Length: 286
Image (tube, rainbow, N blue to C red; front, top):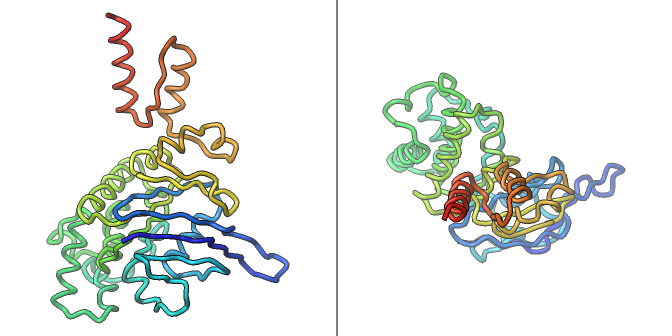
């Protein structure tokens, strides 16, 4: 499974006074099993791009290939796209509506016309994948759960569709620090268990650095930067010129570099920074 986007362009309200070019000739690819983080300031085109990958929007021009099959040729049915590509919007818990967790998670599989046995299996598997206990939560109302648990249930409802690609738009938005950490841990677990392509948008650069194999930086509808987290966050000044930042630890170690002789580092995480600082101190004490 892979994704290839070729020369994608999209305009809101074409020919109208408020016409807006939201996606401007974007091309990129994501390999099988990769986690791709997408960053950009508000209004840069991130969410518009995600909605093209799920077939919610059709491009003005360009092509999107999912596993070598073009989903923008007008021939592919939306239901077939949604079977492959699951999209979880911001605040997905607002879309919970059934009387029990199990029924909510089962909603998507039921719409696929699956038999009861297969639906039950998918519901149980999806609830387990997001780190919840089926016996504990299945008969509860989703509205009785904590904010982090509600988000897990909403994501389980998408996973129950067995997508080959999972897209998460700001998966930690609005959560307290504890729930935030739980959701990030869940995202890692989902990827380890399923091994599928995952795409997530976030304003939290620490999450982007910790989770991503690849990072896309979107600015004014274009890809401004593309590469590994280390490659992208090495361009600190360029990111800041677009109103973006780097992971907090990067700013900290850069200040250390400025004040410490012969200390240089490319650390992106606190663990990396701690290891390199300890190595530097040990070297100085020899």
